Length: 415
Image (tube, rainbow, N blue to C red; front, side, top):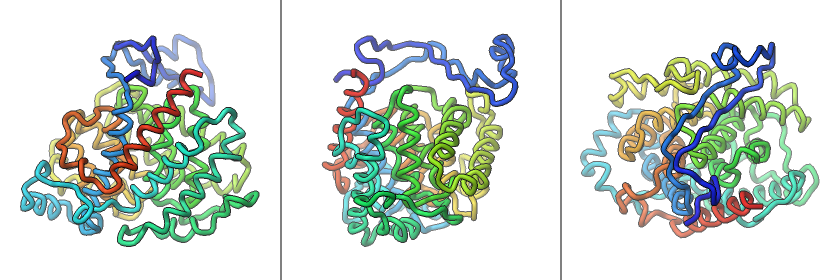
């Protein structure tokens, strides 16, 4: 299968640099190279790359659902606030590798149902020739799929913000997709369904498209920066995973590249601008603090993890400290923080990723879903026990979305 990122000229090794436009004094090139004006945020030198194929796209969708089903455990683990208890129960079940994630005992939650809706809408629309067509063709289709998927929420514990706002969308009416600014719209519901956007727009030249779709699909239900910027982070990180950017650089790129682009977009879109800007700093501050804590603000350094965070109880405490209200992963900012933290700590270990992202005393299905997608886009299915994905609920739909998004994104690359 042909790779998606670099086409026929794809190379196993290449260099990649990301630059941030400094809003203040631009400085000179010498200072930028030293990193003193924060313009050069990372230089990825000669990194071994694996080809991104259709199988990686399918893995991203499947392992997102696997992380969701695992963290949800038919609602019993999502709403268990004690990670130690979850890990103890996992041992009584024979350990992680012995679990067969099938529909009866391990159904997917609202996270996967809505993620599928995002992906299927984009596959249904197919190629988009012009940025203006996003509003005319894609957004109404996404809203339509969101409204329809709300009929598949029995026993899936849907978030109340989505339950309240999605049915009010009117895709066939001008302005029918725009909901008011919501001071309480900072939950993780926009982020948990946004990863497919990064699979659809995985190349740097489509960043503005990715940002627009993430923001607008996100604020169909979560019209608050903490909510829809979570969707921006989820989509952007998925795009970087496909581009094979090292995970240690993702956070710095989010702050330096994606968030400024999102801010510009929101200002240009012109809806509830002042309310959005007034509430903007919380998300950015929480991410900046996290990157400083892990020692990766420069986008180059390796992350620092305290030894005691190998314990579930210590991770629970850390995740709670990142959260808005004590339930780690339930908001738009910390779903990404916890999933990203797990990606950094786990590396190529699926087991470690699950232990950290899907098995904790917070909103574990949402963080598991996001982390599973990112991990699958990078590493595929080769090291995964088949019982973690072969009997998943909606497996065929998940695989079809992966295939469809790969095909559409690849056509964009070769236009």
